[in-house]
Length: 157
Image (cartoon, rainbow, N blue to C red; front, side):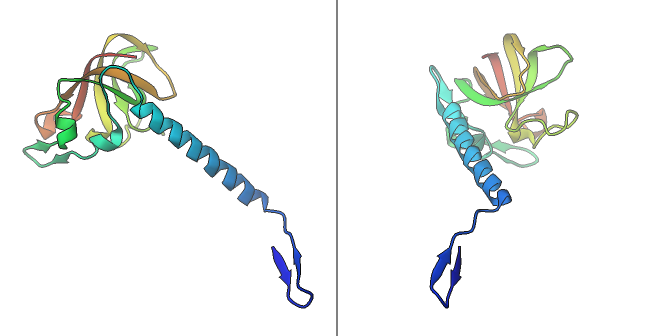
């Protein structure tokens, strides 16, 4: 908006296309984020777990210390939403990694051991580019060198 101080006339300037596009992208991202958060916390039987909760683990060279809310879920049925990282070349997977973030590079794993979960499924789960919600029994690693800090057994969609 431009103001002519001599005549006190206010002229309207059209928004720049780049700013308009940025506003649209941020609005859509906000809506997607709200939907993603609802999907991570919605569920039937079992507790829902978010990647944010899992990030609270503290690792030393000899021990893992999990947040009390996560430690209480060890051996219990949980749901979590994430991205499938196949460990084999088949279209369907029974053993794979579930990650907090989607693949940026097909040959790279995102994040560290608190950002992924080792999943063993009851039956084959088809690969998907989009996030999936998996239900299974959560197992916490006992030592920092055991691989991913989290494992999901008897998993299913």
